[in-house]
Image (cartoon, rainbow, N blue to C red; front, side, top):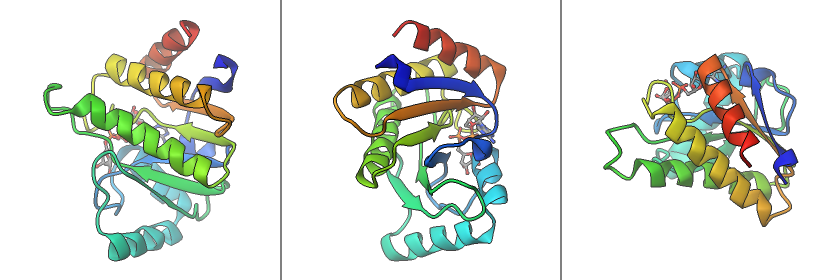
Length: 174
Ligand code: AR6
């Protein structure tokens, strides 16, 4: 089963999968980091789609996820989730991060997508300790795909070397 999970270093907007995940904020109006990169690559159609969602159902709460078109990025869809801001670990951060990953996997599966790429949610601006975040990401995905057919393949796309090394280390332990 662990052959269904892989790690690579790079830019998530350039990965060949059905759906990519964005580490967004609750406003869904874009931002820095991976969110900025995705909005830049996708173009204005993505912002318009996000605005429509916020108009219809309000902002996206921490741990929740929504799905949109992908604009100019050559994937089928983008799933936007909001990871927790790290406050020291006493504010349900782990639970919220697990929830974020699980909701993304649910949305991908519900839409029939076979391959999904995740960034290291919350480990940039939101300050989640990288080792702890990687363990949660890998554990949630491993358990999820262990009992479900979809998504068939999950790619963790790390931007920095530190996260790449951490993820590789956890994956070899599976
Ligand atoms: N591809 C893959 N990963 C990336 C890319 C990229 N192109 N660019 C950065 N990363 P962050 P967060 C990595 O800060 O911590 C935004 O402003 C980065 O190295 O993007 O969840 C949102 O609007 C890090 O490991 O997201 C929110 O306000 C990881 O992506 C806030 O940041 C996550 O870093 C969300 O903070």
